[in-house]
Image (tube, rainbow, N blue to C red; front, side):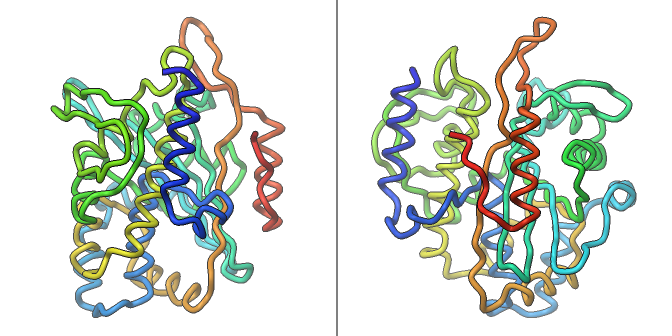
Length: 327
């Protein structure tokens, strides 16, 4: 698939969504946004009780040892600002361990009513503590959440308060819980590993077909990069968010689905406080992908970040200003 076809796919999917949402600046997501959308409903107390919330928290809690290590590399929120690292992991047959496939830095300022999401391509080359320069997604394989948090925090020069890990292997369950997601592709293919055919055109995508779309690593053909794949993921999740807002009527059921594949160090009290902080206000969300270029180094393909572009994103985010366009 060439760049022109890829562009047509993304433009078609945008036009298929509600026009009023399409006018809002760069509302994204990545896989973890699905969790965020439903978690927001939970946090705002939509028809749920304290003891039910405690049960949800129990499902989402990190194991004690990992929680201890995460505590060592995270900081408590300061003032009205909270930050989080959102990591989508994928485990496939033949792999020794899960890999970080989607990595997003999240920052929200309750007083300003602004939130920012910066997607970090999984092939981005950066320094991993005690491992040297390597692809950022290898930090998860080396040390899971604690090392990933430390690596991203050091690179961005920003503290991280919370981590949310989303298991891609259960992504299809979330899509099925929605009743499917309408999404457009201008090409079709068969995913032999998943045993599903992705249909060309506008279709209601069920779980397996949706998973094949967001896991596809061939967008753009040989010239395609991690940026292309992230872009398609973002478009799919945007559609998922837009449709979930209209279709989720059973919040407890939806939340139980999400809790089955999300792990976090954010406790119940913090969740409730976060929800109260944003209740009754419109949260403006902006997003961007860490800018960079694909390069071969030592026979390995990396994304080498644009340091000036990174600094510009961070400066705008800290000032609660519009993010600079990467286009």
